[in-house]
Image (cartoon, rainbow, N blue to C red; front, side, top):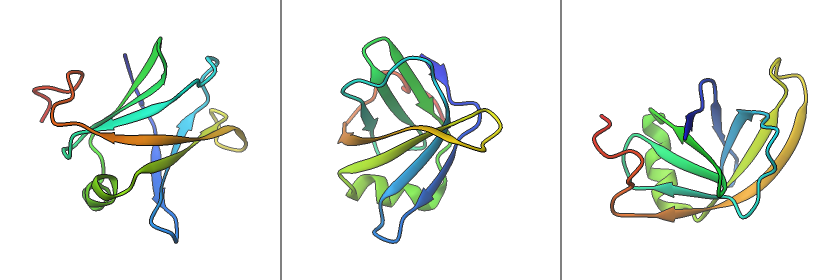
Length: 103
């Protein structure tokens, strides 16, 4: 698992979360986001690439709890170009093993 060191999130007019991440060389395949209602979420891009989205903005928590999916945009490191975009299901879980004991 790796941390998303620099990510942004915006909420669309339709109340859909849009996460903006740095491009990853690994292709996203059957991506899903796990969310337990707390301060962090886990993005499974594929079975070998897991990203921790830590310290989510407070206003995002309610939206993640209610929304069934999110959009991921992967941009160049300088942020000038979107290289990949995809939709992910948000799976609500009671306990997320990757983030247990994180504040």
